[in-house]
Image (cartoon, rainbow, N blue to C red):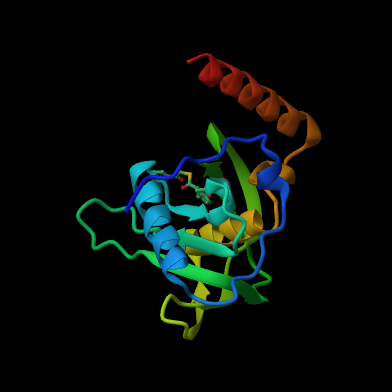
Length: 173
Ligand code: K1U
Ligand code: ZN
């Protein structure tokens, strides 16, 4: 397992639509392991492959936040939304590609998702609460969408400028 570098917005790779995965290979298993390690290390509750520069439709998440609780790592390959609830939920979202910026985003409170597992089997599950918010946030990454795309243009621009400054500072070392 290895830590992967997380891309910081703005980056053209974070705006691209990722490609469906054709089959589970050793490379894909390694990617999923690395993504989970990178997510836990950050720390975060989710991570999508484009955030580490890989344009495959793969995401990982674990929304178990309580200390001492058993982790519940999930790997979703080619996830598809089958159903969304009418009821909506507002959550203050963050993003590992937009560090230290948070904003309220409204999304369906529940979603049913179908995906392929690492053993090649298809799985379907209904998510609610933070899991529902997280899976929608991560699936947006697979379609080149960031949580700031839901915000007013002025707020989005302000955050983007902060990130451009951060990237300049990081490049200087
Ligand atoms: O996709 C990402 O960049 C990961 C992101 C996922 C997410 C957060 C909040 C709402 C929806 C999706 C994060 O994990 S940001 C970090 C974070 O939320 C967190 C970090 C440590 C403990 C608990 C949460
Ligand atoms: Zn994100």
